[in-house]
Each structure stands twice: as C-alpha cells, then as structure tokens.
Image (tube, rainbow, N blue to C red; front, side, top):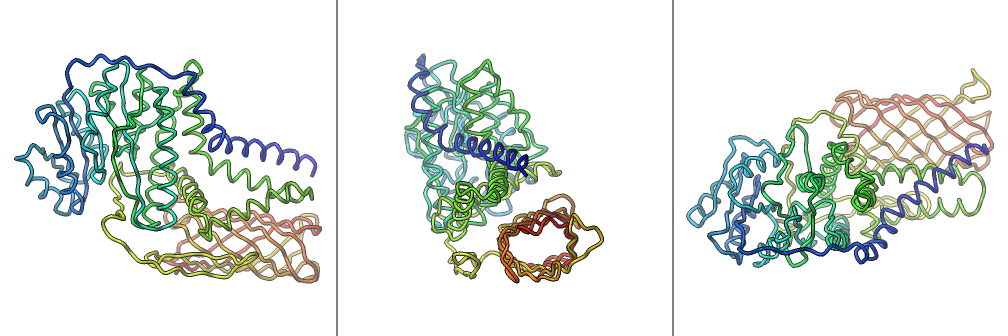
Length: 539
C-alpha cells in the first residue's frame, strides 16, 4: 500500500499543480509578461485598405435582417467595404431576406446543400476582393467603428491577425449562461494581455480579421474551429496576432443550458480533431508562444483528464488516514455538491464545460461526416421557462436540477451479480445494486446508488455517489466506465469504493442491457471482484 500511496501522491500533486497553473498561475503571470515582453507595433498605413466582411449563415432568418442593418451602419468608406453573406443550404428564409439587400451592396453566395461553415468560408475567401478579411457570426452586432479599429494594427506589416473585443451578455438566466458570460469576461482579459505581446493564441470567430494572403484553407473532412485554426497557421508562418480592445462586438449566450453544453462539446471535438497540427506551437525556440499555447489552451483542453486523475488519487490518499488528504477529498466533494446544486453558477459552468470537453475528446476518435452545422437557438430569439425538479440524495441533501425542455434526463439502473474475494477463489457473495441517475447527455451520468451485499455472512447496504460514462464507440454495443464512492451500512459501517466497466447493449431508445465487471474495495474487508448483469432505463 505504501507504493500505491506514493504513486497517488505524485499523481495528485502533479495534476493539481497543472490545473492551478492553467487557471491561476498562468493568469497571474500575464501582467508581468506583457510588461517585460511588450512588442511595439510599427504603423505604416498610408491609405485605408479594402475590407471584405465574410459571414457564413445557416437558418438565421430570426437575426439576419438585424445583422444586415447593423453592417450597413458601419463607419467605413463604402467603396472600400465588401460584404459577403454565404447561405449554406438554409431551410428557412435566410437567403430570401439577404437577396432583398443586394441593391445596397450585400452579396449573397448560395450553396445548394449544407456543407458546413468551413466549406462556406473557403468559398467566400476565394471570392473576396479585400486586402483584409473580416470574419464574424450572424448574431454578432458591431459598434460602428469596429472596422476602423480592426484595420489600424495591420499598419504593422508583421501583424497577420487582429481579434476584436466580444462582449457576451446572458439573457437566458441559466447557470450555464451566467457562467459563460463570466468566463468570457476573464477570457477577454487574457486576450488583452496576449494582444500586448502580439502573440494572441486563438482568435474569436465572432469578430476577427486577417491578411487575405495569410488565409489557410480550412479542412472540411471533420469539424474545425475556424478562428483557432486560421490564427495558429498565421503564428506558424512567423506573423503576429494582436487584440483590438476598441473593436467591440456584442453577442448573447445560448437560450438554454442544453444548447450551451452541446456547443461546448462541438468546440472540444473540433479542437482535438486537429490537435497534432497545433503542436508545433510548442517549439522551444519560440518560448513565449510555447508558454502561452501550453498554459492557455493545451492545459484547458486536458483539464478534465487532469481533474479525473486528481479526484482518483485524492480518493486513494483519503484511505491513508491523513487528515490533510481526507480534507482535500471532502473539499472536492463539496465543490461537486455546490456545482450540481447550481449554488455557484461559475462552478456549475466549470464542471459542465469540462464534461463537454471530455466528451469532445472521445468523439474526436469517431468518424465524422465533415463539419456540418448544428445551430443552437440564442437567448435573444426566445425565452423558455424552466421548472426546477429536485431529488433528495445523500450527505447534505444531494439535489439534481432539471429543465423541462430536457428529455430523458433521469435514468434508473438495477444490477445483480456476485462478489468474489481476491484472496479466496470460488467464494461467491450476493451483490445487488440500484442507481438513480441524472443525465448530462448521452455519455455522462451522475447519480446516487444503493443496494444489498451479503459478505461472509454479514450484510451491507452501500450508499454511494456514482458516475457512469458511456463511450461513443459503436451504435448498439457501447463500452462503459463506472465508479462509486461512499459508505456501506449494516452489521458495521465501512468505507466503500468501486471501479469497473463493461458494455451497454442498447435495447431500444430508452433501455439497455448491462454487462459489468470491476473491483470493489470495502475497508477492512479486502478487495473483491464483482460481475453484474442488469438493466438501464432512461426517462
């Protein structure tokens, strides 16, 4: 056990320090780095350049007319401004609305079928005549001077990309919406400091501009984050990327938590799809860019992996009996409780964001039919009321909060099987488990579990906090991972934890047959191997 505790200690502190660096130490280091390594731009503009505004739109009839009106109010010479709107096979009236404004200088580029944002941007870029390409989303509203502000830094010939300042507002009132708004405020501050260094890692697809001759065609076989891909390629070519604080655009969050979560999954998947093409940014001969990419992006993308390592290692160290590690693990459980209860919106957002990133990571290994659209409604278009449903759980009133527009958010599972002590082969003990689950999505379930165990003639009723991860590999037979942690009550009381896995065999849209096996540790009772069969129902 001493070796196990030693390994757990190394894993715990390593993962914890990396997480703190990505979310705390890195941010604290930016003001000092921006002062020490601040780059002075050399402006050489004589005449204003021609600018092409590129918008890839799909089913945007609710907002596109307002967007066009906003574009027509831009304070920039009309003869130097080109506006191209690509309708990517919309099934609504988006193209029809845009056509009404062709006489006012709006150019419609229509695709016969939906091919995805990347494909449309590639097409628009080939048509564009401007020296500077300005990319934005249909729902991003500009301040009138936004083009002048974005163009100004390009007077320095080494500037290849300029990112604008997006102000994200939350009108949805959901914890994810509030968390996203707060997170984006912090992200904007980070971009300001990176902009002072002219080494901003990753633009903002809602509002950024590049030199036309530095555009790298976007891949279309799998989904891609166009702003990050284009920005990275510009950095790799030796040019700089900066931030224009005065180039302001406004946007609102998704109208509901589910939409925001799905958007984060797509972002995570797109980032991991092309991870290896971004790794050259870790070039040690460009240490500042390597530091920014590693700290700001790479650690964020892998924070769910580091978090899992941190949780597992802290749970193991809690068995050492040291008050410090027991307190650490209790603090982790408290954080999860506050997040799931949505008492602290930022905590719920952080947890959901990392779960979405983890799902995106696994989805990046699956086949994909290109980068098609999966549009989410926004809070400015409609407001949906929610009814909060709470369930009493273990410890300090474990509650789960569900919106009415979610489907199949509750699951029930029941399993029966046997426990075999590791030290005594051939001895089988009865083991029955049942769980109540809250489903974040098709992949991640969190819940509470209980059941009945008969071990050596002693009976136990375990009460655990549980996690269920269903990996998206396959269509009917899906691999799963399970974990439980809590206490077993009965003849005596003992700490219990389980780790296992198996397969989830789909038996329809809302039921599955379960075949599971794993390891159970009952304090002072030794380890056991369990084998279960069961059923999962989703409502």
